[in-house]
Length: 233
Image 1: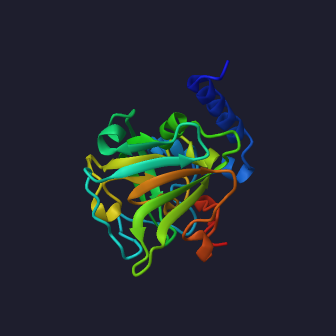
Image 2 (image 1 turned 135 degrees about the horizontal axis):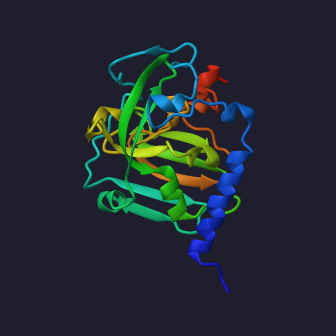
């Protein structure tokens, strides 16, 4: 008898737990962001080389797309058993979470204890059921480098993407995510430098091999660990 979708999801969850247990020591020692200040477990409040800011500075490629919730779509595809495209209503019908975590920009500023609302990346992955050979993800935004068709992309190991505090967020500090920060929906990766979170996200692709993202091919670190000042390759 063919495996049910539930069986495949259960195997996927167990595989990701195993991957998490086998992560390199550098990953295991990363700041356990999420759920606010107590999550830091004795780590310094700020990674080395960072300074705290009260505001949320805006950085982008120079393209700030205007994507309405009526037009927004999220495609989840690649090496998975159940590829799916969400419209806004379908995305909002998924299990929603609230979390508080820090935001570390590679340009040396950090904004602490941001309150987010959204959907865990893991929820999307469990619906899509990545294939056994899927070990990485590539996320794509609606924004492009001005004058080109080069879209913003972000790459991550699948085991990092399914951590509890990696979210696709639509709410920040109790209000809809501002357009200039990736609204209506962006991805956040609190344990990593913020360029690893795609603004205006439109596509998630599961891959067998790593495919460097927009900044990685331009000399930025592939692993992006703030607690080790892992900024550039």
